[in-house]
Amino acid sequence: MDSIVLLGTGSAVPTSSKNHPSIYLNLSGNRVLLDCGEGTQRQIRLAGLSPSIDYIFLTHWHGDHSLGVGGIIQSLNMFKSNKPLYIFGPKGTDKSVKSILSTYKFYNRMNIVTKVIDQTREKKIISIGDYDIYSMNVKHSVPCVGYKIKEKDSINIDRDFLKSHGIKPSRELRKLKEGKDIVYNGKKVKASEATYVKKGRTLAYLTDLMYEKKLAKFVKDVDVLIAECTLSSTKQKEARASFHLTSEDAVKLASEANVKSLVLIHQSQRYEGTDTIDKEVKDLCKKYKCKFSVTIGKDLDRINWGE
Image (cartoon, rainbow, N blue to C red; front, side):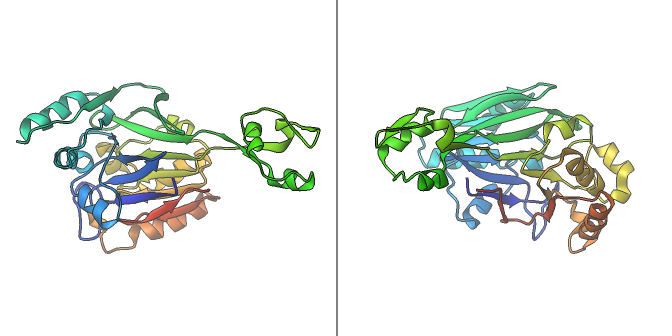
């Protein structure tokens, strides 16, 4: 996956510049959505991405995170897609998908596979190509989950080693990546010396939740944390009552978890056209001595998460 595409970065009420939340990923050729708010299909078109979705991972079933699901299903049916669509989500997801299919008047010819997540501790829920997906329950006003994506480690050829030992590229080198020693010009070449392990990238997605200490463990050391920042740090009481994070909650969490990059989304529409959150985040980064980069996400932004 070359980049993470922020299709929508708004909150409950979309604005002229912010759509309902949705993140688009390409995992080993599989097209994946994290949340699917109203207008997600249009954002996919505007971003120039393929609308042929394979997986939808929903954090919860509030409308701003799920109203686009019915549209995706209908469009895939119009495309006459014969591949399954996997929809993961919290408790009640199976019933919600059935409700969508019974409410909208179109003939469903697709195989829709729903997977319900209901676990208090982090657990792997599926592998998609070179990626493992983890999830666990988080605290919100309705059943809600957080997600973490881990790219599997890979074995790469050490080009400097080959050059220093006069070894030229050949098909035989593939065996080294499989952990097998080879013989080159009569000399043994050990896989352990000619290769190195490239650590896989990590991404976490947390939105619509109350701050808890266990969250830092869940997202510890991730390369990119996409987190909600619904309210100003001056609105802590309101945030607690509505089970949301403030700007300070998000920055504090990222600092505790030692993330490499923090991307903030899901700001309340009340901050549209203001720099309230931007200013707060700058001050908070000084307060928490942040060593990570912070981005205020905008619709259609592409976030790089490493090579």
